[in-house]
Image (cartoon, rainbow, N blue to C red; front, side, top):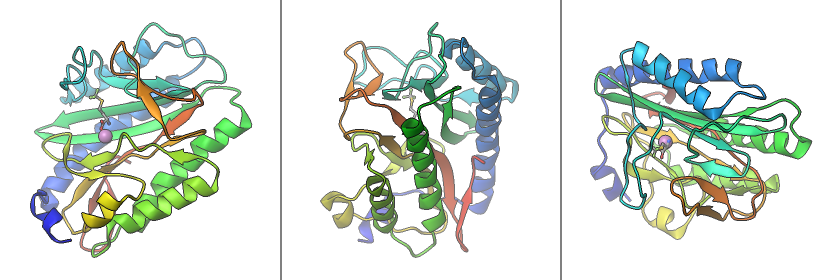
Length: 262
Ligand code: MF3
Ligand code: CO
């Protein structure tokens, strides 16, 4: 369907280079946190570090004070830190990370009006084999998606391949949270699911040069169902089994794809 492409804002090569500058700050912070993560470190300390890197780079932290109607308060931190069975939107706190945990960190910044958004899941010490596999499969799922993007392609083909891969490994793709277009706003059309549905097939995303997407598979070890804690924001798996999350901001180019957050 061509219609879907009409309400999307395509970015010029110059705008994409500006987004890459925002993406570099996101990556710088995520790499600093990778070095820092260890048993005893609190998620609040990770948040403070990412925020400082963002502000020192002259950027603004996108998540801080972000509000959506369904949540009881604005997001109070600069990163989302989601541990083990937490899927997304974990709130940084005095909680200390422990040996054997996995920690998904999502971070976004705006620099000179342009956004970058990325996520990584980190292993802490001695993580059980099956959980390591979950994290590896989720990282591979994102790499697979990026590798399949080409101008003239359709997103449903990518989503089908990612879902098939994840499910062939015995894991599941989260349905309730999806990737998104990104540009001067963090969330722009279209929605970018990593699973196929009738809705996607009827309203496919045509991959055209200038389209910029935040691709963010969330993969659960058990069932795909998730729930939001009543206290707000934090999303956990229904079965309380672990979940992993990787995200990149990527642009479709004339010749293929370029990753803006690497
Ligand atoms: N990467 C997340 C997303 O695209 C960031 C939102 S976290 C929030 O939804 F706190 F800002 F909501
Ligand atoms: Co995102």
